Length: 319
Image 1 (cartoon, one colour):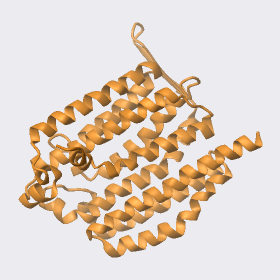
Image 2 (image 1 turned 60 degrees about the vertical axis):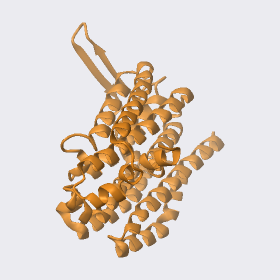
Image 3 (image 1 turned 45 degrees about the vertical axis):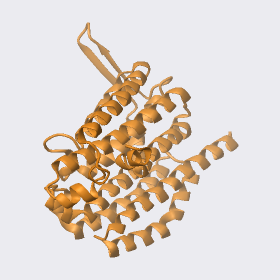
Image 4 (image 1 turned 180 degrees about the horizontal axis):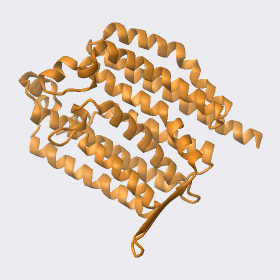
């Protein structure tokens, strides 16, 4: 396997979906909590990217070994296309998984139980999203798990790392007394959820767009996703609702003072997003239709990150 094929196996172009929760989580930590821990943030970035690549490789491996359609197996799946050994791909997955797990456990050792707990949930969903007798991605829950795991999970873990010196939540375990305790700010919980909603929605839309496009192929390969149950027409309506919901979340955050006024820069993207939504509706189920979910995710979250960056500059000016 050469490096180019490896990048195709892990679908490196899709890693932008995990980069945005990382960047926005970091900027939100700086804007709202005024905290930043460089070393652990960098280690987490490495662990996160490696784990994301591992999950994608597992997905391609599982799709290959479980494929019922020989044309898909040999001509469309990268393992069949590149004539890769399935056992080699499996061993590569194990190595990447162990490295990312080791990095995650190292960070948890210094940051505490809560990071470990959230990381364990993300790890479990990430692995079983595509692995096992009934992977989560083959169920009508793929959008929820992909959006929640990456949009909320990664975002929360970045915030937990960067607020470790003055934790917004405290999770303690006393084994000798058989007790545990979780304390923190209720408003901080709502702040994390609201700030992560645009990430949850735009990442879920990537999975939804994929399922809208691949419905016929998925049925042939016994993958019964959300679109199979609700239909393409309803699925396309949901696609638009989730995108519009991202703007609603930003507006709600502004009203609750989670964001400063520069976050309104996100609304400058609305005309282009609207144009992409109309183009997507016309092209489904053509292969190119999937691209619009990526365009919308990059466009919206780039403006979201830019709004937080402008907010940091604004905060430094008014202080």
